[in-house]
Length: 264
Image 1 (cartoon, rainbow, N blue to C red):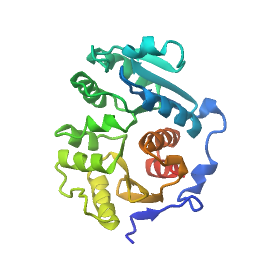
Image 2 (image 1 turned 60 degrees about the horizontal axis):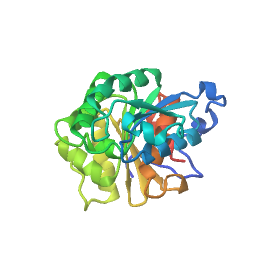
Image 3 (image 1 turned 30 degrees about the vertical axis):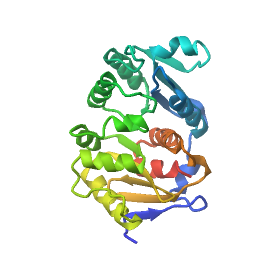
């Protein structure tokens, strides 16, 4: 096995010190902003909110398009609202609210249920260009950044974590014109090699799932963790991204260690 490939199990965490050094007081456990939803649904950001609390976040706020305001009323106390398009997704005018919330937070999670909308695509692109802080993307927020040339710029963006399905990772590397593509016929060893080189070439961290294992690549290092109950099921990306975002903002100088440990 290559020296950049590190294997972790639930009973043998790679970085046990992080498990014992977590903030005990929520006042010191960080602030997370979650952005997502559209008029047809907000299940993904609502799930991310619950998972962030389970992960030990100090404070979490959720920004939704205002097309959901009447539907939710006061039933979701954590929800805040930004301008939406006629179809119910985030409008370009929402960018100011995105940036304001991001400046408050220690980390931002762009979660799912964004819908398919050209204005929302522009908001995401402008937000990632203007905001310099830590951002985690998962679910259909990743779909918005898989095309060229945005794929290359997102992969090269510092303080970025992309939590992807394997098929999304394939599209992302195609969009970035990666010299080492991700293919459906590759084995684990080959995928590890591709992730190793990609994370040396680009600044963004990558998390993906392959054959019952969750892989994390940051700055040339790649960790390999068997899927466990915490991140099992169809909603694994929301769960994994929420926990990773929390652990990362609590350990901002140790992204590889924090993101890897979040999977335990």
